[in-house]
Image 1 (cartoon, rainbow, N blue to C red):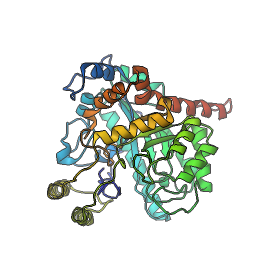
Image 2: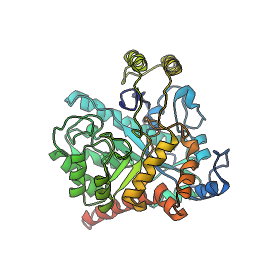
Image 3: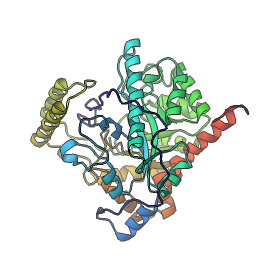
Image 4: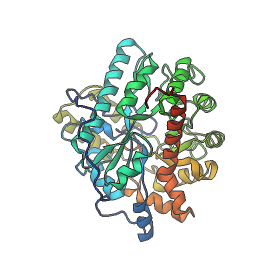
Length: 430
């Protein structure tokens, strides 16, 4: 949901919700033949806005499901990022003309014990249920997408596209066939690790243990190929990326990553790997995190750490505690504001570099909204037309921009579907 700094994802509000079980297929209605309602737009040219509104726009890493259980928070209401630090809701999606994307089932990495892994599995299942409940509660607004071809149909019908993804496969435990259950829930992209190593892969921000994918990680990759789930190597190590590039029978994705040439950070990808990713048919979805070195602020870090101790991750907050925590965070940020932080210009450099190295067929957008993303000048999804204007000014055609906003990721998802179909026996259903 938010980070203590861009060097750590430990400060979040990812808390379990209970008693929210519903039928997975409930609440889906026929699409309405209308586009997004007209809303005030960011300050871009009329031509850029015209092009932007004509495109299918998808983001591959929306951490917004972490807000769905928060007392009093509704996806249908417009929220102020200065108040609750959220970046995505329906009014702002309409303003920024974001058609949807991949809504993340995020699990912070914990100890690899049977008890902790069972708890992680339960948390991941509940998060998936919460996403589907969001759709079921607002059938005129959202629709679940099952295949690549669903996304343009849903958007043309005036609804927001909801694919599911997994960030961190730890909840699968020692049984990779658990992925079948998440596939049935709607998951079409899955990562391996997060900020720490787990049973499947080395993390890019941890000391090497497996030196790539573990044996279980390789088995999980094969299961992804069998089902038609796209393998996501964001957060995983360079070695894990090398293994996936060599072993995957379908193109892979980095759902929210950056370029090491812009900012030398292990979460980012170097140019050689960018070229290898493109050669394999994959795509990097460029994020807004780790794009500029930030000046440390020990006082802010200490204050945030103390706040985290009072509101530890994993504890369900009451409405009063939630309000108190947000008030404390606002006070910390007011007393210790970020100075000379990343801006839209830094994001622009990141995106344009990826396009230069990988090519326009292998780049998309995965800004990491509500997971630490956002920059000065593009604080939430309402500002997304600025990305289209940036690309048009850089000389890219409308067709090129369409690839970046959705064409490339849907191509990769479609390729995974074709590969899965080729692996099925004639009597097996998709």
